[in-house]
Image (cartoon, rainbow, N blue to C red; front, side, top):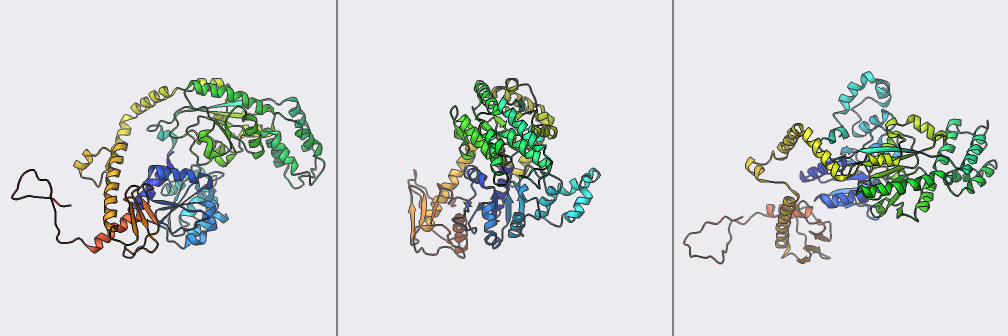
Length: 565
């Protein structure tokens, strides 16, 4: 719901205010996505820090991953950060977790921004962990918090008052008044096993009924049942992986393993093939992209599905290549943070064991920027214990059995979605106008009224003003460095290159790069080099006198008035 943009707007504002020590930590799979957003939509300088360049003392937003930050926590702790922001911050909700302790210590004095769509994943104690990461003094200790608030609805009002001082969220119900957020339409495929799978099911059932299982001597019976049935529900490939891990401990599962290895086709996989054919035809009719995002819980199933579908479709397991493929088959590594709004068909090939994970998967596509209604296909086998258990836990609104064609029949064309969106805007027109007026008042508080009335903030306006500022900055940079030793100006590429032994040109500051260019934004109105140039001119002072030459006057004049800037 826009938390990436909200956070980067805050970080940009802090940068403009002179708070230049900014750390941004994201999950490794999301690094390229955040880099792309910074490059495309923001003028603030940034630097990506990896293992090959663990230098965190760089200008602009310092962008790195959780793994890198944990491994170089000591280097991070040596810098007095103004602000530290954490994407998918629910990773930090366990105060005793090693990663949480390490990163909290590394940025102990920094202002902290935590981004998460799922602040409570398992219990209310997750919320406690996030607040404790920000400020340990906000709440009582963990034991006191648990006793006062865990399953105590009568205390939730008090807790809400505390949390609301540190957290805010945007709900879909709120955003729908402003944002064109299409519908989501769930549909469930209840598939039946083939004969070989049915026999394999009986073999598993017989084994699980044994009072003692030598392959899993310490495992709880319920957990053991769930483990077997979940693997079978996914694919025989997933079950084979499970059984292969037991053969060095016992021989009793060899027969089951040999039989499972002989099953070359899964009924579930066949149902997926049929569903994709129908779905892609329907997507084409509606002008939507012929793309599908398929989630599984097992890497063995991921490989099986990739091979199964590769003859008919361009299939990838690389989330960075999904934009150029028909189908992405992935585990839940892609369930957090990714922007796949170009895809409107989500397949839960394996149902996850938490509704929260299910929601995270769907949100990859059902998000701002999505132009089509999103169809979500869930696979379910009512004769499988794990699937039945999931059916008991899951939100019933997610599961429907009308068939995939019926679901697509309810999807709207992009034209109809736009019409419905206009109707929504009309319904909330008065309330929206008030909110917009408040936002504009906040935006233009530093402008005089006549300026505010003249300024039309459009993409073209922003581009034109940015071009003007960049042109002036380039002229200023050339003037400042033209007589300095070992500084080379390339007019064609608008680049300043630093020589091997450059003359020191700034008071109390040094250049951190060998090259600065308007093209890659290392030279920009908000970059450190621009600030240094302007500061140096300020400290050196402006000459009291000078000469202005005015050429090509049309008429002779005796007195002329000129405004010198």
